[in-house]
Image (spheres, rainbow, N blue to C red):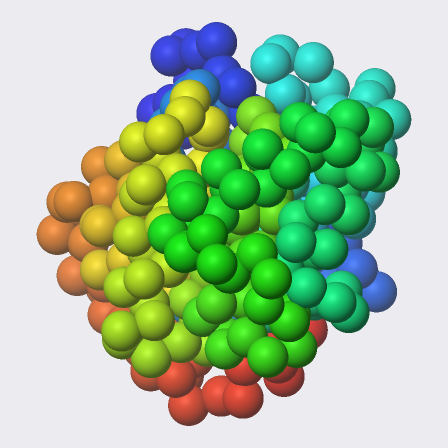
Length: 260
């Protein structure tokens, strides 16, 4: 694929395959992502997008191929180290009981950040996630879906990961909330050298958030390019297939797809 030879990459995936229960979910995926880049993974239902993110943080072990962080195989890192450096925000993030502050502090305590610094980081992370400082005292179970998504982004950001993986960060949201979460993601991008990897089924979202985008179909990368022109650059057959899969995606119950 075209990206090889442009390194060194912050995160690189080489010839990655994943088989689960006899199904090939990922089939020779290649991608190279530079530090500070915002990289989108686009695809319809069952493309394997979420599985790709989960495999990067070793929630699944690949059947073959390798994943490199700063040129080093992630299989050489302790999973806890890897997940501190590469943080995954899942599609419907779980919140702990208690306040937003409890949610932000939990991971910081766990990783041994001193309480004083943790408080500063938590407050800072809220700002970056486009949430008002007063949010810190809100009860997590009283948050809207969009607020929870932003708290999850803040929680991940507070841990100072090097790479943040966002899985369909606005899938369950209406347009206004989508805009708020996207703004938070763009602010995050401006505020740090964080490398972002965003899974989405929405080409317009990839255009708004991504520097580069790959299109994944049935576990294979079928196109790669500049986010703003990717769809125009697709051959008409591939574009029609993607549009068809999108229709199907909108018609399905979101949780119902094991390969998502």
